[in-house]
Length: 429
Ligand code: HSE
Picture 1 (cartoon, protein in one colour):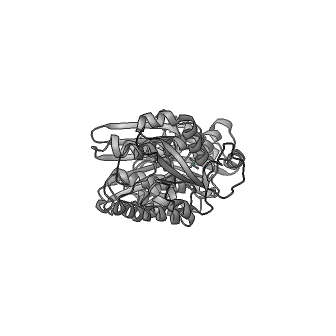
Picture 2 (cartoon, protein in one colour; picture 1 turned 135 degrees about the vertical axis):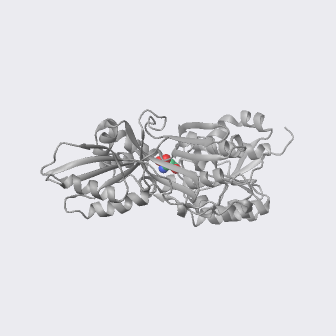
Picture 3 (cartoon, protein in one colour; picture 1 turned 30 degrees about the horizontal axis):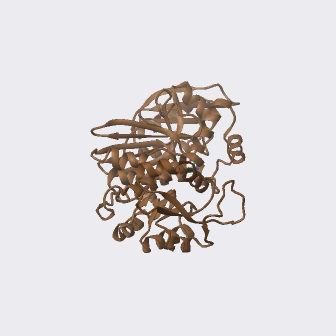
């Protein structure tokens, strides 16, 4: 091989960083054969130098400061695996771009918040920023959107993109244990982010959705416009009652362009139990993309973990080694449009769970409020009483979230309603 090796500087030697080191050790010949270049690590940086990480690292130069690593002359690609949307990761990526280096990162938060600016900087400098590992771990979904579906008008992007939430929800159903028990189990298994609200509050998945929406719809990445709702209030009752009606509850991301602008939602939704999304178990991720020519495609795989995430990092490295060059969001950053945020624009049926006083006229009051807001009841069930309260479940015909919110406000104020109502969207998938 006569071409010079491609030299990586890796900042962050946690699970993913070590996964990258292992892939390069194990598959060097294959990577070289496929890309036409040897890929080598020249320098690394991490919080603790002395920790035993199970692979030899002494052959690599050590930098305490990731910014210094990013600027090294013997680094061609700065591989950022530290995380965090401010501070060290951002400073080091900016330093890498200023020094004319390509960047490969798994940092969804950073790109969801600062992606537009970083993309403009990178493209002006002729550098790549690649981030396949930032969305849905090992699933090559960014490649699918930017390359495989490049000629499609994307109609909708949906997905379960947080494995921890899907693990909690599917284990609640399988074991009959409550949310808090499963949350603690995830903490013990090391599944939770350092700030668990990133997982269970839907923020991590919201970052991922914002990135896919930007690519899919040619818009400036706009995480602030993602309507976020976590899974913290989902009860076993909701899961069972959704199941009785043929649905499963998923933390589902949906991005679609509507007549009023771009709708981006990450919230617990009911999906048909027999759909691919409904059948997704455990920590697995799934992304569903609908394009005008291709129709619907479904991508499924591990959304986290050493091997899958490092596989995605290395896919980006291999692309750069091959000479593949792509704009950060699939088209030049300056051509991305600032779409208005269409909050809750598309109508859908909703699942409502209410706890009503068991007395004459209680249900009629709820039905009257729904009727006043123009919301029609599709199905209704009353479950066995809990003391003198009656759990009531209502499935509405299609309505908008703002219609529903108005109704919920009025319902919550009724004297016969003893608990804040739960409302979950039923997504047609
Ligand atoms: N915490 C994420 C998940 C993985 O549970 O899917 C990293 O984004």
